[in-house]
Image (cartoon, rainbow, N blue to C red; front, side, top):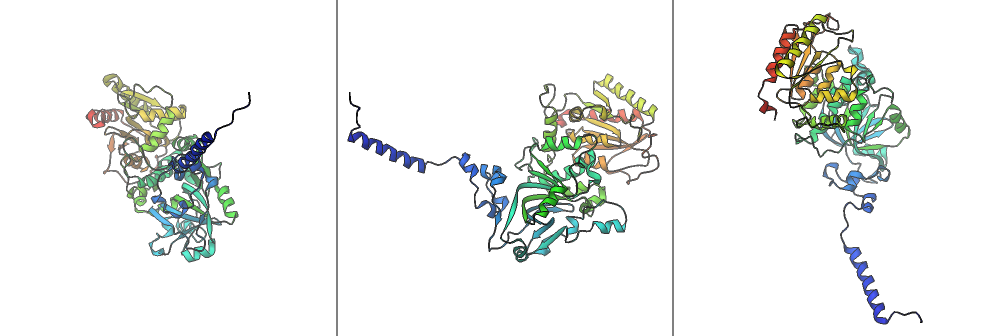
Length: 486
């Protein structure tokens, strides 16, 4: 039987169907999340202000390798925008870097803060007029130039470092320490950046994109971690996708001789922060950032990430919302095995007895711990559950960062009589909790705190404490109305 041939009518019908399919495929609206859309860089993105960009898959997830340079051709170089600023902490849009020098492009230089309040030379921080003079920035660190100067120096385009960058201009002097990393540098970075979202709710959710990279212009890759390996835990759990660049990377970019532009950057400089009024009051560099707007829940975003990472896969059924147990938890962080800055042994033993008496009488959970004996995950989990944390002034109290702030949340810090430092007192208050300092058989709290002092004996092993007084104050704090915690 010969093969069948299509009739003229069938050929016309197929042709009409084909034309119809072509028409509908060309006019049907494409989904914003289509892969073809994701991979097609928009030529208009780099010409718009960052704060006016619509949040789409393209603007949020464009691959860096496909990002076009920021081009202005024969036109005006886009100016740098100072989004927020306090001494030591500044947010910029379109910050330029050439040969290792930071450039602010502005035709209104009178509106740009004095660079001493934004950056320093990044040398070690020491006392004395000569040391202070060495920290004063020069044109090598930062320059403010006009759009005309920028066009002459930069040419017609700049390579982009897209997304949000955190740039730390500090030496390694303080960074390799858990407290200074988490409760000063990281603390200040997030407080500054989170000022762009002053409506963070109690859940910690935010519209802010996570920083893409953390740049240390004066530190090598081997010198940002602390001896207890807490710094990297905090960073990697808070921002799992973040990349890090160091001094050699900064020098490599400078050696290329090309201009780079950072889409949005948070610049931190410890020496510059020391010029701020709030630092002069508290000796805490992050204190300046609290002059910016912000949510009362600003730290919850970071706490949730770090604590959630540390408790992943564990049964939290006995916990209430936020990881806080249904009964109060008292945690005494002991330094008795450190051979430096310890309680009188008899006072330590009486304190432990009094805390256990609270446990036996009222059912409170009591933990007597040495932090270096716990794993990192155990430290974060315990701190997250703690209602009252106490101990001698020292690095272990940095764990207060991971407590859940409630009206009963309290930190009790033991000092050698006459001694005082703002480190943990300020950090506690910045998180919305209550701090008490102890001098043996007396205690004090804000606003009646003593001046900063380090008398002989401050670092010694004969620090007194009245265990009965501590226990009494614990019970007083824990008998506040429980409804207030909700």
